[in-house]
Amino acid sequence: MAETIAREANTAFSVLKTLSNEERSDALHQIYAGLKARKYEILQYNKLDMDSATANNLSSSLIKRLDLSGNGKFDAMLQGILDVAALPDPIGKCTLARKLDEGLELYRVTAPIGVLLIIFESRPEVIANITALAIKSGNAAILKGGKESYQTFKILSDIVNQVLDHHTKVPKDAIKLIESREEVGDLLSQDKYIDLVIPRGSNSLVRNIKENTKIPVLGHADGICSIFVDESADIAKSVRIIVDSKTNYPAGCNAVEQLLVHQSVAQDKIKLNQIHQALRNAGVTVHVTPEILDKLDSTDGVEAAGPDAFDFEYLSLDISVKSVESLEDAISHINQHSSKHTDCILTEVKANADKFLKGVDSAGVYWNCSTRFADGFRYGFGTEVGISTNKIHARGPVGLEGLMSYQYQLRGNGHIAAEYKGAGGNKSFVHEDISTNVRF
Image (cartoon, rainbow, N blue to C red; front, side, top):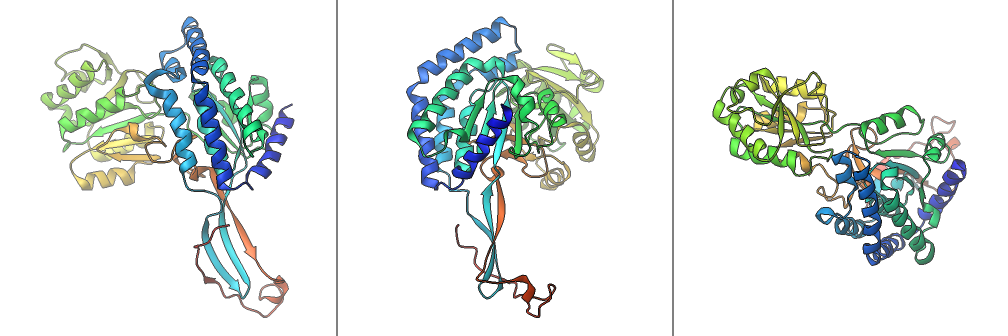
């Protein structure tokens, strides 16, 4: 069964990648219309999942991710489809052009990766996000949602399948939606047909997938993001950024989990308590080391930092706080303890910011702004398939560009290698760069 699913998706990919940008974008508009027309029905099914999650005492962070009705999430999901449809065609861009000889020209051209296997937990909007990005980029996709989002997943998948089958030129098998957990293990062995696995969910999910497949995996296991308050930081500005990074969406992988303060700030009771008071007013529990605890005016909402406090992703209104002696110590701590997702420095000294941005080995490095900006939509990517802490092939929020590879196209007119030096002949290559202002 899994082999059949993977093979059918691969066959659909061979057709999808040949469709025009207009045909692919029109399919997204059709999906948008189909989902919008049945919004009420979708939210009713989503409520069933929410009620079940509550009854089964699932974590608050998981329930927040599951909710499709809150904070305009449904409408944002639909708008994301249109945003992707409006993006420039990512296929067929020429990134290198070189004349090897008269009539023999080499082009490096962007091309889709192939078949994507996306396995996700909780977030039902991922179906729309991935479908839009996959179709626009010419990639086929196999999607597997978590059991906690089964009802929402089912209705969304039915609508997408119906739209593709009856209203578009995109092969219906270009987007495959599977429900069985047993099929996932078998799909992870289909490296002949599947080109990339993208897990979105808990660190245990990601780690399990990485350990059980030969297919390349794109994603991140944890979102342990850090903020460092430098000795020159503007405290009023810093407080706004810290509170937003923690409380805007605590369950997000880009929410800050650890706060490092320069020792001069930690020793300044006014500054330190200003930070603590703002977090306390926002309902945040701070997990602090002894040198921080000694300087706090109040212990309300304060707990001692445990042994794993700086290697832990809370995904809740909690944050670990400690003092560091210098900028260099902050960089060293982050490189050792963060998950290489997104880390930020708060400072008014550009030289310190530059050193931090160069020294921290994370996918996103920020200066004086909230870690919550680590998001494909906010980067202008339209939407994203996830955030990658890999260094190859894509890093950070992965949108259309991250779903593209490239091919070398060599266009000749009867040329053969035997005529050239190095292969038995006497002819020399020209190797002359020519214009890349072409599309294929």
